[in-house]
Length: 138
Image 1 (tube, rainbow, N blue to C red):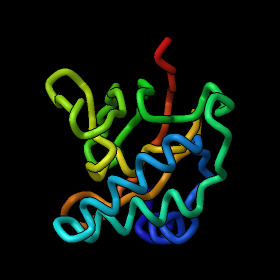
Image 2 (cartoon, rainbow, N blue to C red):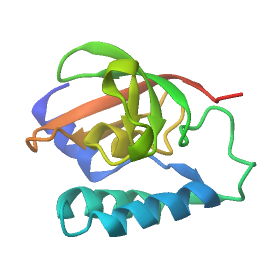
Image 3 (cartoon, rainbow, N blue to C red):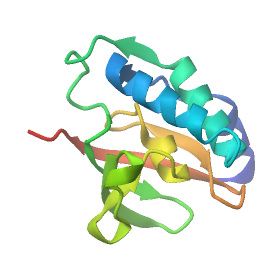
């Protein structure tokens, strides 16, 4: 993707969907990290504040929620990754469990299969995350 296209994509993020339960958990986490990681806290609040909120249990199956397994492509590396999005106390990068309070985790929440988002790398460079597949835990 060309530089100008990346800038346009960053200005308009795709619609996202979050359950009421995930909204509450993520808002609580964002408040708790506000002083230690203000940039990440701000990104989390921006994402959940723009999300369409669904009653718990009624989120579409193809939407990334806490506990979802997701396959995505990161355009900065060109690699495809499969991870499970989890709360911080469940995170284990070697086991493929990525915390919602990591830059990648915050960028994935609420997206659905086929969507992509321009999302900053930890060093601030833009990148595109494209969702290939979403599976919910049974």
